[in-house]
Length: 110
Image 1 (cartoon, helix red, strand yellow):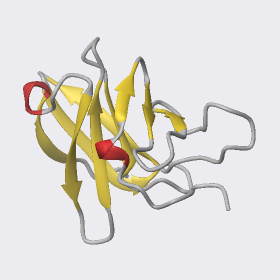
Image 2 (cartoon, helix red, strand yellow):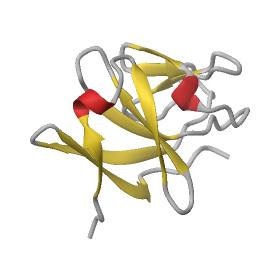
Image 3 (tube, helix red, strand yellow):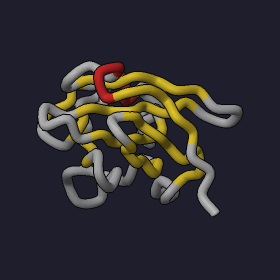
Image 4 (cartoon, one colour):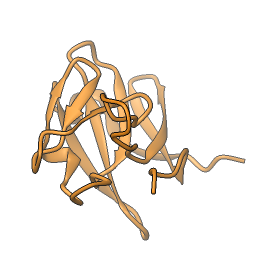
């Protein structure tokens, strides 16, 4: 059974930006696209440990602020082959409110 935690409303996340939510085990970056889509990734680049929440959001992707590596927000996959994968977090919207599941949906590539 999935545990859902409310983290705010869509307007609480800046358009083409992110907000960081802290759990007992990790920081989670909750992203908002220009189309008001909401995604969540662990707030850590798998390459350089950069804070993905501080990266530039474009389309449905974010660029790591430390080395410009691009990750797809929906899957966490790197934009180029063999770029690795950021850890993704399940998100659901209910009446404009954002809920996340602090459990990881996939592990970053080793």
